[in-house]
Image (cartoon, rainbow, N blue to C red; front, side, top):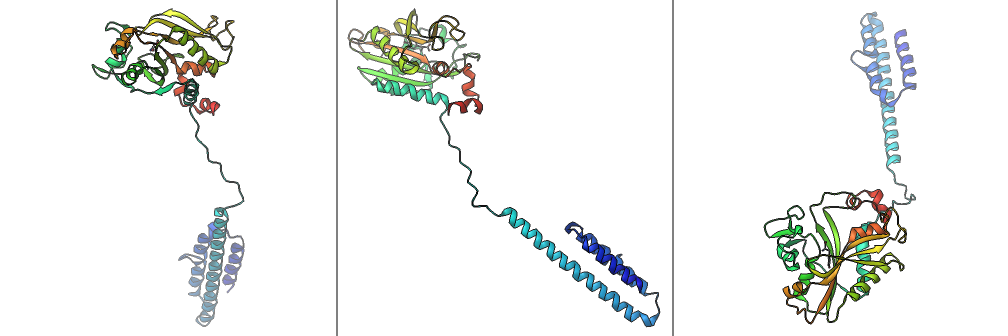
Length: 338
Ligand code: DAH
């Protein structure tokens, strides 16, 4: 029967070019219910009875042959797939490992550490205080009268009638003097909050460093010497400090402090707005009323205090143009200070 031979030849041709994804198709094509082999069996009906047996056997042989070949290929493909998978999943133990990244301090934390180290080396202790403060510590005990604009709802985040987010680190002065008697020599660094609209130099959350020294015979000269020494260590030994009269309720006299511009060395540039000076914060001699509030006799003891902005210090030292950058969490910015 020449049809049997034709099917065998067709099968040989097809299986030679077989790809794994076509295996199922090939199987149905030859062995399926309407496949080539079934077609041969159909032809069997029309041939003479005496040839039927032998031809039927031939078709059966072909069928078996096709089944076996397909099974062989199936196993071969499965093996290949397994092999490929193993190869893909195998681990090359000679490839160098991925280095794990170490964390690093935020630029503000670094600056805070630097400041603390300078003051520690000058014999200061470090104090802390709560960020949620009472009206008493934030204002009242600091001689800030009821009508003072700082108490305005517009400047302060009030949590209740008596509780607020501290607007300055100065309340730590009072808390320190309540538990420690002179001689006192401390700094305190922490977050402060104000209802400021944010722009390149204002942020509703920022940090201050507060300094307080109380002892016998403390004078304005000590204040000046302390800030000058800190400034030199922080910004370089040629940096100057300027005091100009100012008013803060908790000091008398009070002074605004500025340092000579670290960019232009005082000649005048864009950063110092051509003035040659950069304002850093307030300072002064502790007001007698503040000392009285904590039972320290202003006749026997004097003190000086100062409060500078940490972001301001960091921005000047590291040429950071915008205070908002500290909290934006932009790695391109932060990674510069690794
Ligand atoms: N607490 C003041 C402020 O936030 C800054 C200040 C001024 C602190 C004078 C002081 C000081 O200790 O003596 O504006």
